[in-house]
Amino acid sequence: MFSAATRWLERSAELINSLNVFPVPDGDTGTNMLLTMRAAMEEANTCSDGDASAVAEAMARGSLMGARGNSGVILSQILRGLAKGLDGKSNFDGNDLAKALVESSALAYKGMSKPVEGTILTVIREVSSSVHSEEASHTADVVAVMEEVVEEAKASVARTPSLLPVLRQAGVVDAGGHGLYVVFEGALRYLRGELEAGEIAPAESLTPTPLTMPQEAHYGYCTEFLLRGNDLSVEAIREKLVSLGESVLVVGDDTTVRAHLHTFDPGSALSYATSLGVLQQTKVENMDAQHHDFIMAQSEASSEGIAVVAVASGEGLTEAFYSIGAAGVVPGGETMNPSVQQIVDAVEAAPADKVIILPDNPNVVLAAEQASSLTRKTVAVVPTKTVPQGIASLLVFNSAADLDTNVSAMDKAISTVYSGEITRAIRSTDIDGFSVKEGEAIAFLNGELVAANPSIQQVVLDLLAKCDVQQGGLVTIYYGGGVQSGEAEQIAALVRESYPDQEVDVVAGGQPYYDFIVSVE
Image (cartoon, rainbow, N blue to C red):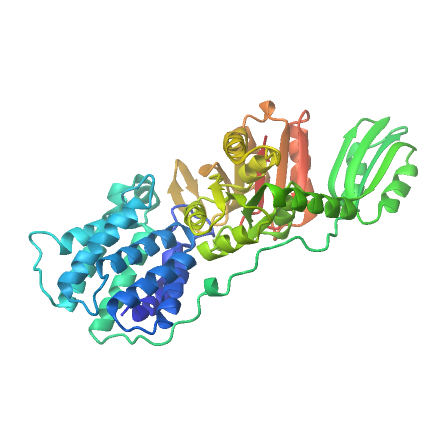
């Protein structure tokens, strides 16, 4: 029955992904639920005991370890409740199923610190109440009970916009609730003979992506110099250095210029500078050697105390976390939330008995919390919801302090940073007071839509206007995998022009879906 339901869910995964409140290309609820169900069925298929209780327990175990995202974690709790309700039963009838669904609802709610109505939680609660109420038929017929389950689930999903204003405003139903309805509908279709179970494609979570560890570094040389001359052009020098390297910073006037860049060919940068004037305070450092020494020192320190594991997507962001002290980085983020198993593996691989997890995404927090209870190590989750929050938290980590002190300091650091994300709208919609057109650049500040404009440059400025930049000391721009370094530097130049007193850094983050992630500290 659930094998068929998984196949039915697979057909609707993309539709469920599209039920995103915001018009951004990172909808992943359908994918997360599908991978969670695949993990459940993979484990169930290894069960040699054909009793209902044993199969349901295997599904619960598989879904827990393979759960991805908030929707996947809640789905795993629903399956765990089903297993609890069927405990000790070799087979079951409709009445048993109805009682088990009550357990599913109870465990789903128990797993959430702040349950929100108008979501998958509401759907499982209303379904369980419908089939286990005084008015219910209490039939032993499983098909009849599942018919009532599907009917109530469909109606409950349709009501979600009336319970959650953000759904009503966006003109969509809850994606997780719709996914649960699809699972129940697939189960019913199997029971009616309308759908075959078939073979389930392997879940990615059963062959977890290995913990990303630092590879051989290729950073080049950190090159700095002070240039003195006549009629120097700061803009022309910056433009030239951008063509020679990354993380370019050029400030000064027509007689004195200070420059910084990361390059594999410092000689070219220095030769160019000497053609313009006299060099002073020149410094060239091998960042590959520095990075190696730092990682080794971090590993040695972590093995005796506390290690930090972060979640990030994109080579640049991964290296950024390593460069400031992460012992491990789990690949994941938007549309590719790591499974509970992957996070557990990362914790086990970390070189310390105490581990702090930085989820760096609101859809990874629940999975991180589940993972923390599945290891013998002492684990704490600092609930970072963005990459800038994760980096700000890691910057205050002190390997000499105890776990509680670090968690407290890192938790406080979350509020010290503004987190902005910029992408392109995948559909037209009216939301949060903005009339968004498909293809427009849109910006989010700490998860809230704050700007929409055809010009991505204008959206960046509109975003920063909401960040109280004058009170911050550093603006960091992480540009995505689809953005060229030249375009990122143009954005940075615009920011420097608008905020001349602020330091502006540009980092090749390599993240998918979001052209720019902007941090203001």
